[in-house]
Amino acid sequence: MNTPDNEKRHELTEKEYHIAVFICSHVFEKTSPILYVCKDDDEFQFLCAGLHYGDERPRIVGLGHMVDSDKSILDILHIANGEEAERGSVAEEWTIRKMAE
Ligand SMILES: [Zn+2]
Image (cartoon, rainbow, N blue to C red; front, side, top):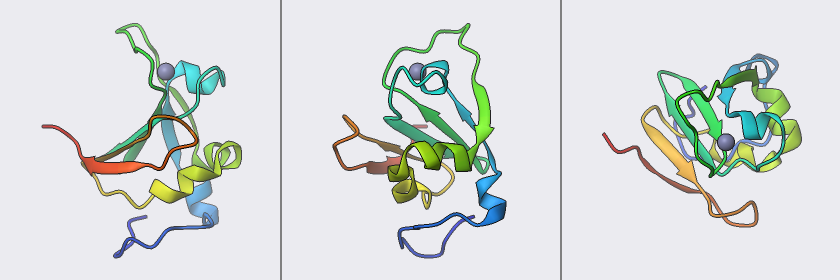
């Protein structure tokens, strides 16, 4: 689902809607907003800004469900493998950068 340019996506295809993504328990339980997204090996992780301990068990959900609950995710789905997107709050813009090695 890489796009050759940085065009923002506004809709998911049926296939993209069902892509499995990893999310932390806080995002899963909707106790925290998504403030950090990274992509590696074509897999997305959506995390809150909180701490995630070793016993944190990531949940797996369909990408479409995440977009349904937070449309701003559409703005960062074009990130490449090895990139991450972060924002200070849901009211702020995403900052995209390469992940630290
Ligand atoms: Zn979390």
